[in-house]
Length: 304
Image: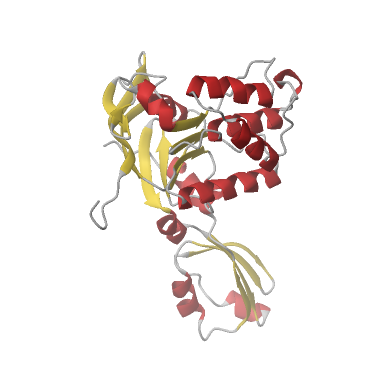
């Protein structure tokens, strides 16, 4: 392989899926490089799950195409599935299954012994091997689904809302494991409805709305666009009445000497504006990535 050459594990070109006259996804073009954790974002009904079902060969596209490892996801779905781990958003498991019996069943399907790796993952997620699905909580069923998606160490992991039902500790364990997979060259396609949820694990994200791609950016680019909460305390109440806020600083609340603001520009812009003014204290919060996410959904849809 030539230096600087990147293999795309997932490629979709003008991918389109209709349900009758209803658009599931339209003209979706994506490339997901090998070894990347890729965030796929949108609210319910935006087209995320439709796209994922096409990628894992459960739906045939109406138009365009999707390829994984260079293979067509519909015509070659049986070959694609060999190296893919998948957690559906609507996880359904047989009520009689336990984690132990599930490892045996999946192992027979995949033609390999998965018991040892399954036990290791079950320990990581605090999953009892002998509890039946019918008596599991929602969060425990989610953990079993994750372990089954991971147990065969797939080259590509496709997760549809994977943290649903997980407590914060389990969410962090999952994210740590995902980062470890990516560092070893595995690729992760991580669907979520929250940009803040994926900000510490993903390299890039795509945002879909009404079945269409509305953004495809690196996290660093999105952080540069994100709003920050700013608090300014002036030396005196009179000093607080004098300045006129610049366009990039939206003042939500003024009380005595205090301004509570939203910064829509850059921090250097703010520092330049405030320099030399009678400011007693300044506090600048972290970028609010969900504000960027909401902005894409508040704006009018742009037709291609």
